[in-house]
Length: 188
Image (spheres, rainbow, N blue to C red):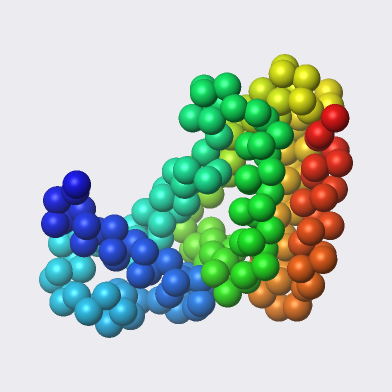
């Protein structure tokens, strides 16, 4: 069990996620986060120095999400198809909820912050998906595809839909067609 400071920090991250998803990055101030978390300015600043720092903590947490971190399942020798199916279901669910997407905030963040953090996060995604696909190919569960190509399709189509669905209503069938295409490209 974490300390009170760790729990408060986690609460700030979780609460701020919804604010950034709804409003983007540029429109959010520390005052907005104070109001949403009901923390004093001093209380908030004792955990984070800026909205940028909070947003980066959110991005780190997203990349650590168990549902999309395949290493543990692969180490256990789990079926690559099962790992893929779970990831595709999560992707479908996320694509069907554009109001929960950080895509707009990530776009704005990248335009304002010259840190290369998004490249780091993108590389983590590339590495996770590359590992899973190579694992599935080695086990004979996935077709021998050009790994880089399918990783690009997975990452960029997914993020594109997440961004685009904020401005154009997309049907659940559209989301299913995307995950179906990924499945057809990989599964024997």
